[in-house]
Length: 462
Ligand SMILES: Cc1cc2nc3c(=O)[nH]c(=O)nc-3n(C[C@H](O)[C@H](O)[C@H](O)COP(=O)(O)OP(=O)(O)OC[C@H]3O[C@@H](n4cnc5c(N)ncnc54)[C@H](O)[C@@H]3O)c2cc1C
Image (cartoon, rainbow, N blue to C red; front, side):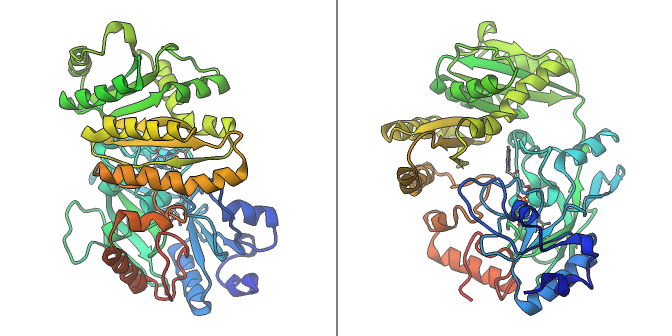
């Protein structure tokens, strides 16, 4: 197929890549391990009109289209697993407006998430969703994955901050839902249907984001524990205090050790077996001090095992350790797989104990960390020196094991990274066939020929 010829009347030559193998490969994959993909062409639209014309052409010619933000996804969502055209939003990266009166940001999908937070701050406003990848991921990718981060425990996920969208359907029609409004029950809620749909139903070209007043003060506390069990039991006790922490992040010893080994960051409690980072935010220091003081009512928390970050530098270094875990795991074992199951918060201790034991029984090297406050603890399993044959054989078995334990505990198989192409074959563990069939009918209504991000979430029998 001569892609340059097909798209030359829509985009300037420099916005169409068809011949640079290295670049096509770079855009054809995301951060997922063990995935092979190869795109045929990369396009860089600049307007919703460009996207509309591209989709119209792709529909006519039945060309697969893979929307792409920053490619930081970890389930193969933006990977061209069946080839096709990558629709990169790199050039649609404008913050169109910060409207302080309505407390709304209007943005294009390619804006990097952290830039939205920084732009809002200039108006003393706050965009709370904070995936650990916030300096590299795009808001379009966040919407498509319904990304969350440490602050989800208090503020929720991306979905909770979308008041409207502009989207383009597969035939090229530009549509709108919501806007700078707080309430809307006009017909089906397209924003909710499309949020988390992983680029399989429509392409997002503009987003209206709810902003909230920026909390004036915040405090970050690190607590070291003698065992992982102690740390996890404490999470429940902190939640029971009803002081509404902004974040409760969990890191087991090895997660911290590998970051410290690969950086010049300091481990504040080197002999601890697990640590929690707790953040409170609010209007004034007195209010925060009360919340911090109450932590010491919990038996396992004392001044000896607690570090309260006093300076911005200290706060930053606590979070640098947490945010550096993924990269450090990649340096330690370039091949690993990452699970982000969620269980009800009260189930976390028994869930983690069970999984850890099962992984030990299988002689697997695992590292646990993540958003303990919302039940979304990440489990990364490292290949290390295991031979390829054994690794690829055992991976699906271990995934099934983890998912079945999460489901038995009333949880779900993914809390933020999505299904993508990686977990597609496990969806039937998480929902009955009737529900999968309904998903297929929804997919077919939006994308009858199955050209939008094929091979992700569900397969359409077209
Ligand atoms: C180090 C690291 C830490 C991470 N931490 C977190 C975390 O804390 N929380 C979390 O939720 N995730 C996390 N992630 C995963 C990832 O960053 C998120 O899934 C993020 O939302 C992906 O954004 P992106 O712009 O990179 O999207 P991409 O990876 O490019 O795409 C993701 C999906 O969105 C679709 N898509 C992208 N743009 C559009 C659009 N405009 N219209 C329609 N569909 C679109 C793609 O087709 C794909 O299915 C982490 C990843 C890494 C590497």
